[in-house]
Amino acid sequence: MVYPLWYLVALVGFWSLIPASAFILADWIKTGRLKLRQKHHQWIWAYLFMSVALAWATLFMFFPLAQAFYQSMTDFSLTSVTATRWVGLQNYLEILKDPFWWHTLWITFIYMVGTVPFGVLLSMFLAVQILKQPTTMQTFFKAALYLPGVISVVVTAAIMKWIFHSGNGFANALLHAFGLPPQNWFGDPNLAMPVLIALAWLSANGVGVIIYCAAIGNIPSTYYEVGELDGASNWTVFFSITWPLVKPTTIFVTIIGLIGAFQVFAPAMLITRGGPLNTTYFVNYHIYRTFYYENDFGLASAMAVLLMIVIVIVSVLNYRWLATDVEY
Image (cartoon, one colour):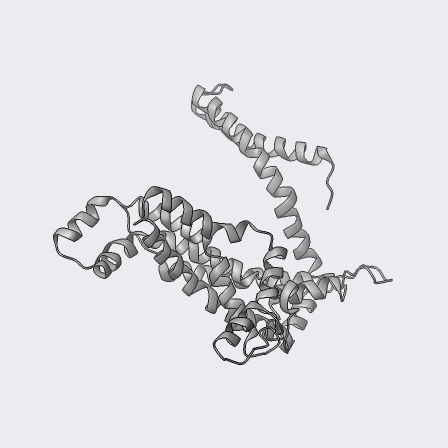
């Protein structure tokens, strides 16, 4: 979607005038004069800079989201020769009655369960081990773990397809060296999903490790010193000190992981194409094919809205389960 430049300028002005008007009104009610106090001058400048980000979000987040809601209640399609009709909740009812929608949602849920809990624990464990190293080695390990997240997903997918190639891939060569039979990694319905989950463990934990390193590094060292004086073991120190104090960080990392898992798309698009036998046909890939191959924009928009609702519900439940009032 292309917006004229004046849209952005108008939105910046809109988001700037709201707080400015509020401050002017508040000062007028309090003093009886239309004159801003000095501190409010500073706040207005702060809101002026914030208004640029708010305008950008309005154009490229809020407007498209509102348009998706609207299109989800129409039969909009680029290939249709008839005018777009308002169909209300028909698209939503069609999706909820479709067994394949529930199949893709279940497949995505399996991927989420397989990647997020272990990924969070692995990130925390790696962060604890990294912080035990000298500063130079900490920097090296952080960079090495973060690197897969920087590399293009297309390049990563190509490397993974080569490693797990059913003919002369590295994984089968390794199996052959140990006298084991080769496997059709992405062609076997029993192997494709486990392989994708394992790849997520290896390639998607860099951000979590960096966040946990920052959180654990900010825990006062006196807590650990008291634990050592009491003769606590490493496991006792971890579960009594580290785990409770990084629980807010765990909530954040877990929610980010949940959102990423439910929005998984690249493995299905670039590696498996949803196969074999639709065992890796994730929700986002289903939305993509409905949008671009079936040209049913209304139905695809309804799917996207339902997926957003699912993500919000799961994230809220996760927050309520992990929420803590621990402060330090």
